[in-house]
Image 1: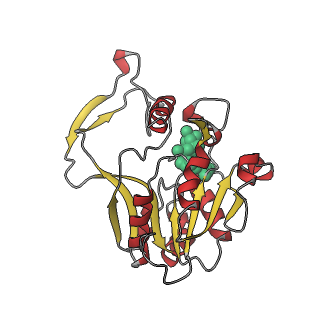
Image 2: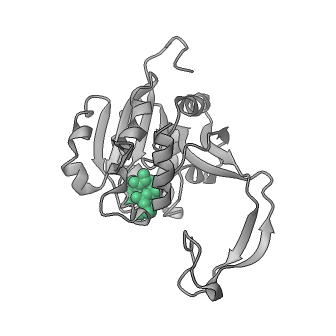
Length: 253
Ligand code: CTP
Ligand code: MG
């Protein structure tokens, strides 16, 4: 249901905002989720579109434990019936699980949104809620437009996700193995939305996939349907120092 539709029933959407990461790739002393973008803390930018949404009943923010114990003033100002703070865990999934555990029982639909995505639009939130309220999982995503290469990262110790920036030494540059067909490939973003029962079932079974990078993959494993909600490319995830440059530009629009 869009915000412009008459509200036939009380708000039943719960929002979980994992914000308990350490922002290591952002490379600054300050917690990245608290860093100002255009003068407004990133986490506050991520919270606002949900706090203003008429279908949202409650928002639970997972913070690093010390920040949850002593939250900044701009956050405590928001803490009321609709916003709750909890201590997050060692991984993103631990933080989502901690937030889900305290979510108001009346929230029958649950959205999960990264605090590191401060530019989510009301249109995307509406579309994700619409799908999740129909009883299907929803993933905001972008259809890939780049040509994809699978490459070996040659230096030992640089496996996994590999360097975020090109490696300076030519001899250790990754070597292209193949071009991956991008047909049908989407880049998953957040928000992701689910009937609450899907997410609870998924998190109860998460030991089988201990460190998922999004929530939909836990739900997919159980065989529940998930639909793609085409999102805007402006809904960036702020990860690296360069992303802050993009974020400042977006904030000045
Ligand atoms: N997150 C969390 N709890 C963790 C780890 C991450 O709640 N233990 C949150 C982050 O705060 C962020 C989202 O999950 O909002 C996506 O994670 P990411 O962009 O990787 O942020 P960080 O983990 O903080 O950054 P990094 O991986 O560079 O340390
Ligand atoms: Mg991380």
